Length: 358
Figure 1 (spheres, rainbow, N blue to C red):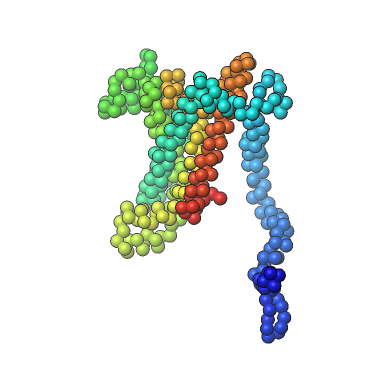
Figure 2 (cartoon, rainbow, N blue to C red):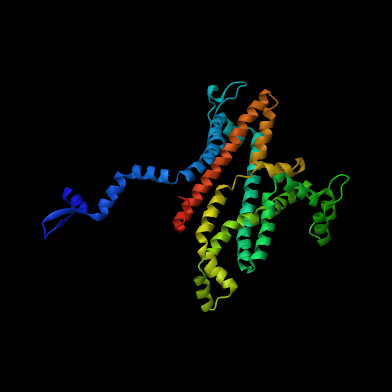
């Protein structure tokens, strides 16, 4: 056994009757021996780049890692004016309560969980392909000036705040007591897509239209900006690939199918895994600004539900304190499910292809 191990590292020269180390093994030994030394040299050489990472690490540490300490509140009995570390453990009592033990709370949670999943799932089905389509269209525009102008117009909504975007949406769909339907509502009524009653009532006041409005405004806001990644991958494709396809008689659609899409497949897989990982991460800002009590049936998500329960805690009563603990438990369940989804998506991607996050 020892001889076999030595033969892998030492080479015997029969002519000179001497032993020497395998050159590849010598290189590996040198790299392992000077690993930390080389690492320090690299950091000192590119110290400016590493210095630029300091603000990012500070932000992540303060706003991503330190708040994790408060997650302990989901496993403890909350007490007024008492730090989380000094509270008594409750185990999984709050999780059991919001899942099935408390009928009223569990009904609200499962409704919010269902709405969160559906909003994200529809966004994955309709919102994920749109940036790819936009990037393909950008690639077909030959004039750089015209393409740059169109790109700026499509990127612009992303740089508007959520408040501005939701305000524009409300104005375009405006309705309610003493208010006329917005221009979009009038157009939909004129085309027969919505009834006059629904337009006068207000599309944002009707639960059946909320999900469609949420997805359309999401595509309007993010399709152009999200296409940057795909467009960068497309322009990196060698021109010789297009020339070879043209020689074989491939038209534009055939080039997209057999040249462009296979070339950006790795980018598509990585972005899809990231999108699946955030499948249950629907931010409360946009939903909160668009929904109302009449649309809670289809609009209320886990984040807005947790915010309302946390708002009850601000009242200072005992019921509010309990609601705060259940809000923490609800958010943790939501985030754990998202983590499981991204791990599962990455595992599947690694098994069916050579591309994965890790």
